[in-house]
Image 1 (cartoon, rainbow, N blue to C red):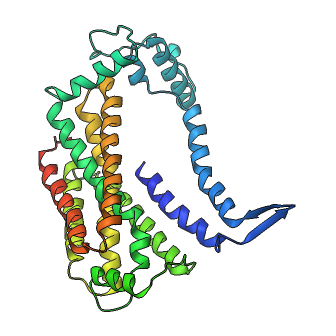
Image 2 (tube, rainbow, N blue to C red):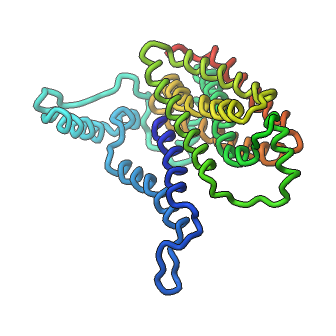
Image 3 (cartoon, rainbow, N blue to C red):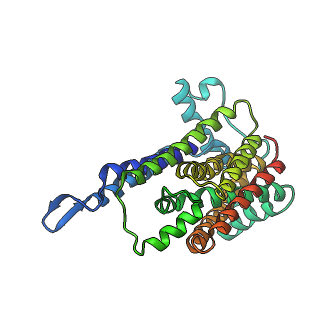
Length: 328
């Protein structure tokens, strides 16, 4: 998942760069004009269509099927995987059935509302409440800072100049100097987006290497602390390149940590509750992105330093909460 996000962050600006300017006509047929932006949208949708096809082909996990009482389908899934990987079915290996020792006591069929209730309530009771809340707050912090800054990255970068100022002074100067904002097709706009994606990819690769020797929570702590320092440095950095590096690292380090906290959340809840736990955590996390985007959009110009430091505080809170994560 981490690498998919990184490649997507690189793919989008690369495609836009090669098709720019996006308002030019590529092909005409009568009154219909195929402009570059239409082709750009189609190419950006291609990975999504590919993902739908792959999800349709790939089977559901056997552990989940067992947790919901579908033993026969779980056996068929494992048999299919065994046949593809080893060239033999389970029966030839002497395996005639599968079971899970920690299944919930009752697998009674319930309607939608009852299932929603029975899947949600246990998450807010012991022994899952503490870990679920910690993971949800950390995940929301990653989305708030990582994805919130990323959404506005190109706009913020467009407002940066080569002047010897801190980023907030650059934004205020650009706002007062230019009454109208025009869409720029300058190559640097796309290159900076590609740099952001490459930084994200580099953080993901480093995570994969560190996981060989270092615990999950330690990596999250390291990334959150470095991101906090990078965000705080935006209060006084005055050169264009250091500001760009600090902003890229501020968002990339936390955004690339999303799969780490997701894996922790999956580890601290039983199989039959994982789907609801992940859905609820990501629901609050995506809500935090909406809030972050609204804060940047409304407060960035009049309260620039306050806005950036709100994100720094969130990164610091995430770093503190990683101390309370279970060791997995």
